[in-house]
Each structure stands twice: as structure tokens, then as C-alpha cells.
Image 1: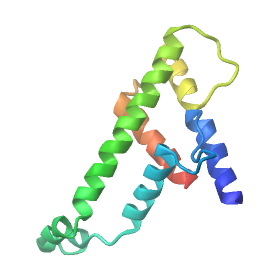
Image 2 (image 1 turned 90 degrees about the horizontal axis):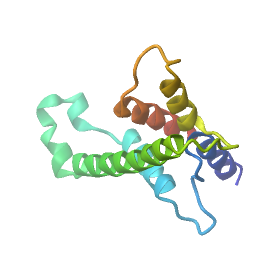
Image 3 (image 1 turned 45 degrees about the horizontal axis):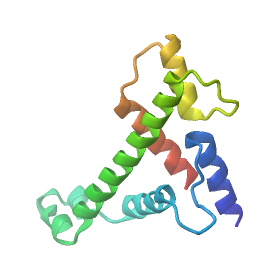
Length: 131
């Protein structure tokens, strides 16, 4: 229960959504768990490059690609929602990590331009710290 509360708090700070909803399911929470399982799985191709075809046969690579595509689409949606909120000039009382990054970027306070893929990579790292 403490772990679920911690995950929800971190998730709300980063993307303004709970990692796990009251009904027990959340696209973000489920995807995060799948990523953690995949990251801890043994990848034969990393240890023995000539046997990386086994990763395709065992289904590791297809599962990895499917999960990555799902998270990519989810992060695109979240970032787009934040872009729309920022363009709407609604000064929200609650700000999350993404809105702060986008606001700093809009104001020119970030030394380098962050592409959407850079922001998604940062979100993926935050998501891994959450779970």
C-alpha cells in the first residue's frame, strides 16, 4: 500500500495523473510494470550477439517494441495535452514536471532546445524511478 501511494504521488508530480486508479487499472501503471519486467528480463542477444535471433523467437523483442510504442503514444498524448494547456494561457494552480519543462522552454530559460523525444526520454526515466 505504501508503494502504491508513493507511485501515485510521483506520477502526479510528473504527469498529473495517478499511476493506479481506484478501479485498479491505469494505462500508465500497467505500461510501467511491463517496462520494468522487460528491463529485468534476460536478453540473450546482449550477451551472445550471434544468438540474438532467439530474442525474436522467444517474443522478447516483439513485446519490447509493442510496449515501447504504447508508452511512446501515451507520452505523446500527455505532452500534447500540456502543450494545449500552455497555449491556452490558463495559469494553472497546480503544475507538474512536464508543464514546468515546457514553460521554461517557452520562456527561453533552457540553454538547449528539448525535442519531444528528449522530453519523452526524461519522462521514461522519471517513470522508472517511480516503479
